[in-house]
Image (cartoon, rainbow, N blue to C red; front, side, top):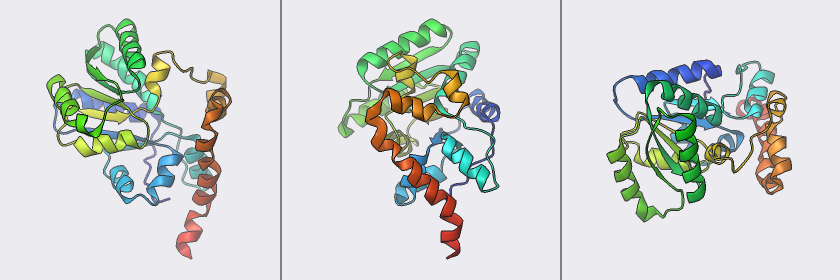
Length: 240
């Protein structure tokens, strides 16, 4: 649907991010894990499409994107999720002493996520954190706090596409080496939400597991069949 996904495995994607963090700071490297919702929204939201196009790296965070690409003969190797990349960065950061700033989710979850990181990854430095319940007029103070913290990695849990839009709006002012929207990953890390068991993940049914455990997500899931049809017919629509 016009979005140029690179053919990256999870390991290759993580390697790119680790190289970005290891080198001296130049400018913020924006990572976007693109799911079908973002793909669909970017078809009519020009600003979101510009944000995706200007990202340092995009990955396919949705098995539907991978499967459609394979059906159309230009297959992506695998799904590369924000949660999995976050966990690998924390593991590597524990060995290398990287610093992280957590922005988003509710206060209790933010505190618990920070505590969990300190327990599991004692060499990781939590440079700062801020819950996601803030108003636009608070942005300036949050940016100043991040500037003072100068984290290697900024993890933004404001939901998509709000996280992507917030990072893009202030990326010229943020001194982090890498910033990434991570959806509800801090909820999982803090134990507030359980991730699908490995069986469901390997069967590419993580979306169904989340739906069964959070029925309120059904409205969001309606985008999946719409995405599949639109993506399959995209070439034919352009030719017409």
